[in-house]
Length: 173
Length: 177
Image (tube, rainbow over all chains, first blue to last red; front, side):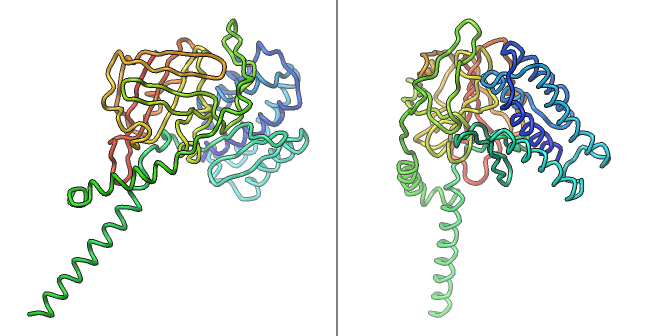
């Protein structure tokens, strides 16, 4: 899915900027620039806010920001060569290349990536800095999950009880 | 419906009991050092992801809950989550909070009305908002919670229907500014 590519691109971006210094005033400009580049690959406005926030905390120079975009371009080029913007459709070898870029950048600047099933956690100095999630375009689920298990249990009990009652009735006839 | 009819009260009691144990009060750790740059409308530093940095109070429905930076399922077990893809109170943009539709959290959202007040007490300042709209949206209607920085708008949502049995694919969103 193209959103997963955007996630990895964002991860690479976050990692690279940890090692650089920037004009704080350009945080919004830079995040907008990155958003314009990656929006076709699924970067959302929410992601843009995350980038802006990190640039506020970890300023980067314009020159060093170019490094970020060149890394993003590498990944985009890889996708273009594969003929798709859906990362799920590229080969495992190509997926690994994308992941390797992110891991290498993280290692270089002392940050750690923890890849989860549907999101990536970014740690620096042992602290969780951000969680970049594959949101699948939905608002977070805030329903009462207990109902699932509870209803299932209740249903099973009801069915078993009814079954027993019916069996007894048949036996008594 | 039958199940609710026969076991409704028991279900509610079990849910209440489990929620009581599920919510753990975590103290606001180093987030007391957070400072806001009022001129630039940005925080000088941000809370660690997953930590509490504020409380949300809605007097109309007697809510006084911790707010955590982040929106993972683990965070939502403890109280109210703050989407890290939105701004912070005081930064002049869109703020998105969310919480479960349990009785301990946002079950009574249906009682809120336009004009009701929401207070966010952060480690760096106090902020108050007035509700101006409520909407029921589909879970995929993310554009109904727009991210912008022209105006400070607080959007708080929970799953709908409030007493869902089975998967809830709608959200009840309260808009305040």
